[in-house]
Length: 251
Ligand SMILES: Cc1cc2nc3c(=O)[nH]c(=O)nc-3n(C[C@H](O)[C@H](O)[C@H](O)COP(=O)(O)OP(=O)(O)OC[C@H]3O[C@@H](n4cnc5c(N)ncnc54)[C@H](O)[C@@H]3O)c2cc1C
Image (cartoon, rainbow, N blue to C red; front, side, top):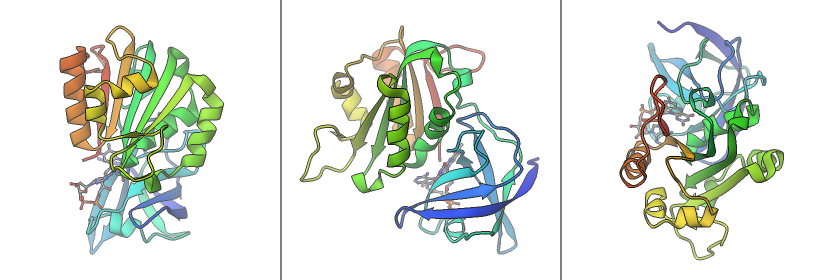
């Protein structure tokens, strides 16, 4: 049974029609970066609850969630309208194993995200604990259009903080007329299969040096994991069985 606490909305940030963030003050337990909370509202006398990754570091008491507004979504269409001082239920304990704590030291940590799946990485990178386990971190962020690149200032400040240790690669799935040479275009899976991603970063994926985290769209996760397993011989990581791939699937 979930133990709930009442949270108070501090702010809603509207990035676009599709994307928003909410900041909630609540007496939640300490969480591990990469974990998620459950948010819940009573809607038409029904309790609707869904999982959302923390994007803040645990030391920051403004609990922040980055959310995609799903058309006719049972919860998001209500979360979208929350205003300052509104109440929302939040799970006291965080859940999930998508954390650095569960990953062994290696040279290269690849963080792959689609859409709102950037959330756990923002928490992990803002927190910074345990990242000494890796020589380099490569954040590969796939979105449809550059207009969907939110949290850009935060990501720029993380780049400054980690300097050469952090490589950020934006991938746009929609081609545009004004192609930017710093951006890769296409799907993560295609860019992996044709080696364009590794070539652009200048680092190879290999089972002796690499751990890969995958977060967001279930198709990206399934297909990328399949490529990593069949073409690179990487294996799934479990708490009690060391491997190279850690995943968090959003639906
Ligand atoms: C561990 C975990 C962590 C999650 N963290 C986040 C998060 O940080 N931010 C977030 O926006 N969602 C997150 N989700 C998804 C979230 O829990 C809800 O499923 C989502 O917000 C839709 O809820 P809804 O009731 O409005 O839609 P529903 O009426 O339940 O409709 C669900 C459908 O919405 C689509 N969908 C769900 N989530 C997404 C998404 N993120 N992007 C695009 N399409 C989606 C899928 O087609 C899914 O079948 C997470 C899910 C899990 C399991």
